[in-house]
Length: 256
Image (cartoon, rainbow, N blue to C red; front, side, top):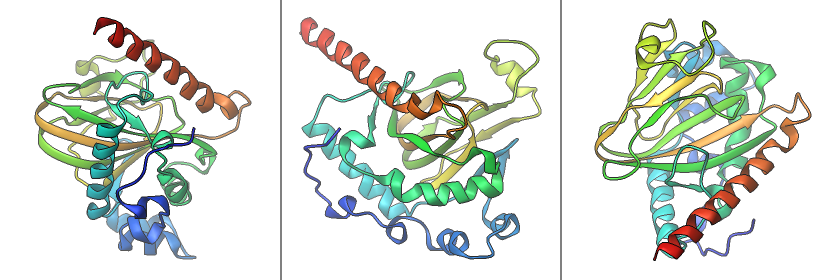
């Protein structure tokens, strides 16, 4: 889908890694002798196999958020970002190819933090927004991904911690908060602008209510094409979300 939106900031039309990724991390990831040991000083394991690290420059996060706010004012309709969040924007529709710039570096991080078997071949990337007076929390769930990259673009408020419930195999179904709190993989994370999280898509996680203010995050779901159905999964997902969004907007118009 080609966006007809005209950017306020022309930098977003021709993004380069050195313009958006923090220099400290970029230097490490570009080194020929990249290893887990090289990453240790800047990463933190927030929960079992859930890692955080500084990634995007805060000034770029602010620029991107401002651009999306402008896009929202100009273009009211668009696809839902996923099956759970109601407030968000699919970056492909906006015309921002941030995923193409970041993926080579995300794959390097996956290789040394998670597993080489999870290298991303296709992705679905979007921005979501939480508001105290709107969409403010999210129940326990897993993602439609092999790997999830989650980065905070803006956070002005209280609450909204991300809760990880580990890997569950004791029983079918979604874990309760009590079960998650007693699991070995439990952890809570408070978002910081520019800092990213990386974890496998099947780790259960939830979002606590935002008590006040607003939070924006950039999400990238990635899949490895190790099975045939994965090759078309995200295109089919995007089409489904577009159809669902259209029905939602059409029903709102009828209500008006």
